[in-house]
Every structure is written in C-alpha cells, then in structure tokens.
Image (cartoon, rainbow, N blue to C red; front, top):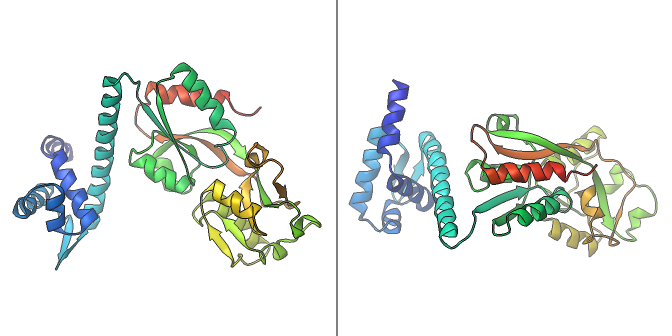
Length: 309
C-alpha cells in the first residue's frame, strides 16, 4: 500500500505544486503567493486544496491574513526545497554546457580546512578541469550541513554536530584539527601564562554555540568550573574574527592551521594554554544514498592526496 501511494505521488505531484507550497511558506499569505506565481488567488486556493486532498493531510493552518505550515507541511516543504534546488542546479548545468562550460561544483568548508588543504585540492582540480565552475562557501558545520541536505552544496568539508546527521550523510575522514587561543601581538595576556578564569574576563569573538569549536571551548570552561565569557561577539567569519582580534584586546579560539597561513602570519600570538583535545576529524561529507558525480569523486580523491603528512 505504501509503495503504491509513493508511485501515485511521483506521478501526480508537479513542480508547480512545489512552487506554490514554497511561495506560501515564504509569504504566509495566499494572495501574495498567487501573485508571485502569476496565477489568480482562487486558482492557488484550489491547487492547495487538491494537494492536501491528494496527500490526505493538512499542510497549512489558516488564520486571518496568515498561513503557517503544519508538521506535515514542514516535511513536505523540505522535500520541495530539495527538488527545486536540484532543478535550479540542472538549469545552471545545462546553460553552462550550452555556453561551452563543463558543469559546476559547490563546496562548503569549515574554517580550519579552508586555508590549508582546500586550496591545493581546488587548484589540482582546476588544472584538470579548467572550465569547471567552482563555488566555495565557508561556515560552521551545522549550517553547511543544512545546505548540503537541501542540495545547495555538493560536498561539505566539516564534521558531524548531531548524531542524527549520521543517518543523512556519508563521512570520509580527512584530518584532525588542533585549536588555539589567539590574541593580537603584545596582548597583555601574552606576557605570562594565563589561567582560564582570567581569560573569560576579556572580550571574545567566537563561533555560535552550535559549532563544535565553541562546544570544545565551553566544555573546557565547564570542566574547570569557569563561567562562560559575557562579552562575546558571535560570527563564523574567519576574516571578521582576525580583524577584531588584530585591532583590539579581543580573544578568540581558532584552528591552529589558520595561524600558519600567510594572511595571518606575524600579526597574532598564540597564548600558552591548552583548550581540550583537538577537534575530531573533519572529513568530506556527502548525502547518504546518492551516487557521487565524477567531479565530486575526483575532488575528494584530490583532498585526500593533499592532506598534511
């Protein structure tokens, strides 16, 4: 019965249905969603009624002037966004082929992999495929994995942040990532080895609480009985972090690999203080159950070949 219903959905549900559902989520209003799709409001209302009737469940609650996805609606919307994102990628790839290009590769990476391992692999890939369009996005693992799930990225260089993610993504380990407490040159704390309790009195720039690097820091503080710092700026931007640290007494936790690169050389000092064990291996993460494209497989092979020895 379930298999038969699945076949019915595949044969009946159309891209225009998905566009309406996503437009309703974004606008929260039938009139605005209809206008966005360039159809009449009665036509949009009938289409939603047909979709809900076919699926046998309510997808949106109706309040005066506003519509909110139900739990079932949220699940259907996840599917719709993935399909629509895949459709956008297909259109881009076909346009690239018509113009003589050779496809596109969208990469996401955690900051620690960006300055060391990743440039070598991208350079090697571009030497083999000079007309391949490569897009690179840097963020924390939790945010990158959302984009990977919704097919906005082809591969992520990151790590698991939740056990449930292991059911969604395959993981090929690449490298461990030591972290360091970073300050500007000649920071007052660089003169003598500081204690954790003293560190938290200073301003900090840190990743959000959901990131593994922030979790490592907060765990070290908790184990030492030290409260979290109160003066904190949160960002996933490596460049913004380095600018704040370099121009003030702000401290940060950063992957040690970043401080070995030329763009930060000579501008920072590493405080003589250990913050927990190194972060676990980051790795190449792809959607589970999907065959990898030739380009993605080649890129992962190049990543593994470029690992520091």
